[in-house]
Image (cartoon, rainbow over all chains, first blue to last red; front, top):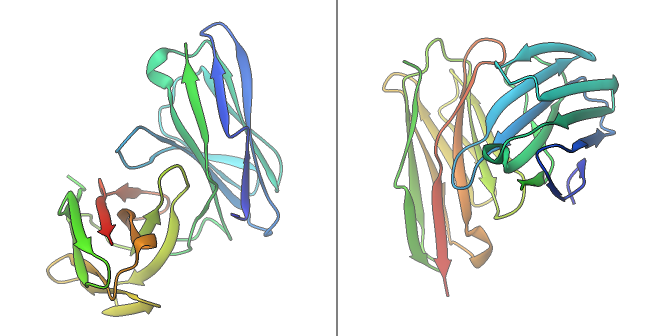
Length: 114
Length: 111
């Protein structure tokens, strides 16, 4: 079991649906990340939150909307997604946003857009 | 251009054998290099982290080396086990959150 918990594990949604991915950690980490990973490709960074504030948005389309309600939770709200958005969405956390700290990954949510 | 290249793309070895995976990078400035193991359908798990001044770091049967001059790293797996079958990803961090992932090496360990 990982220390970063992501729900749901699988999600199938239509292009007009609104859904949310959730990520939770109780390690006291203050930096949290969203990554997108396509099959047989490395993860691509989407967003970084540091002390509950959005630090990095890697030019992600607005149909992806992150939210960090508190230091333990990170959400990714999805709306009007496209088929090419089908991927594994990984959440990660680290102690702080300092360089050199290990990131702890969850097992991801596998998202399929119909 | 900041890049991380890994070789080989895939590798098949027999259980009990050793293997070495390679990672070359052109990331600058350099902060640290990490090796992750990713099992199919799971998130990546950190194996080692090395900074500029570290040449080698071990984690059980995994030993990573770093040559910051030539910008090369390797991950050596000793006495491979079936559970070592996974993708191994080299990740180089520059300033702040600038993190470049390699494409990974898919390792298959056969009985």
